[in-house]
Image (cartoon, rainbow, N blue to C red; front, top):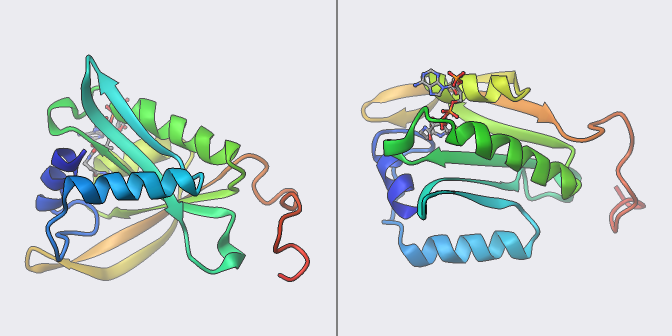
Length: 167
Ligand SMILES: CC(C)(COP(=O)(O)OP(=O)(O)OC[C@H]1O[C@@H](n2cnc3c(N)ncnc32)[C@H](O)[C@@H]1OP(=O)(O)O)[C@@H](O)C(=O)NCCC(=O)NCCS
C-alpha cells in the first residue's frame, strides 16, 4: 500500500507530496484507526499481491457532517486500467452505505481523467470545481468535487443517533 501510494503521490496525484516521508507504521496506524471508527478501508488482492486500496474518512470533523464521507482510491501502477478500480469503488460505496453514511465525496485533480471517468461510471456527479486550489510541480491545479448519495440519501432523515436531539 505504501509503494502504491508513494508512486502516485510522486507523480502529482491526490494532494501532492507529504511534508514528512510516510512509513509502513503510518499506514498501519491509519488503517487500524479507521477500522476502529467503522470507516471502510478496503484492499484489493490479485494472486497474493496488493493491487489497490480504497478508504473513506469523515468529510468534516464537525458533528453536523457525520453522515458524509470523503474517500480515496489508489491502484498499483502495474495494474492500472485492468478492472481493479471497478471492483474497489463499488465495494467502497456499498460498505459506506452499509455503515449508515448518506453522502460520499471525492476531490479529484481536474486533469485526472481516469479517476473522473471511474467515478462517473459509479454514479458520482460533479458538485463543484475548485479553481487554482493546489500548487504542485510548479503550477496551479484545479480540483473537481464529485458527489454521490448513499442508500436513501437525503430522502429520509437518519436513524436516531446521539446528536439527533441537539443538531
Ligand atoms: C483512477 C484509478 C483508481 C482507476 O482505477 P483502475 O483500476 O485503473 O480503473 P479500471 O481499470 O477499473 O477502469 C474503470 C474505468 O475508469 C476509467 N479509466 C481507467 N483508466 C483510464 C485511463 N487510463 N484513461 C481513461 N479512462 C480510464 C474508464 O472509464 C474505465 O472504464 P473502462 O474499463 O470501461 O474503460 C487508477 O487509475 C489510479 O489508481 N490512478 C492513480 C491514483 C488516482 O488517481 N487515484 C484517484 C485519486 S482521486
